[in-house]
Image (cartoon, rainbow, N blue to C red; front, side, top):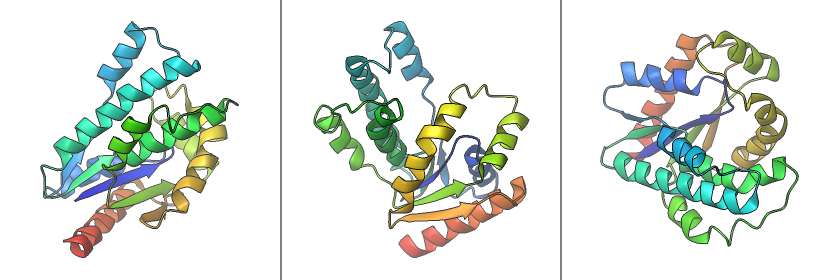
Length: 198
């Protein structure tokens, strides 16, 4: 069984996943690690705001997610720090946030078809107000989050619309929750999913 923790940048996904790793040893954790893909993009000098380059970039990310899924399904239950649902959403929606209407669905048909076979059984979407997201960003000195403003203004509204309409998405508001409470609620959600889907 594949589960995924989803949400906006700086909402607390990694915190929730780390809590699971420490307190739910029966769950395999799969972190989103794309350093190799990012290095290849830099080495090839690909520009995501150029159509042809964007297609090549997303092919790399889509393939990476399929490979990650194939590792995750070797375990009885894996929780993804962002799963295949994230790369599908981003691939189709990022161009809209820069004001272009690129043809993506057919151009990446094979890659999107492959990644759609890797979707989680259930998704926990962590959501928070803009004020709380900004506080989290400022309090986290370990990441630069250069993409944060664009994400907040353009991608997050599309993301909420995309995910909130899916039947397998549960929403957790974290505005008034401590780090410990977010982790605990994430574990409770995970345990419910295991009970339901086992």
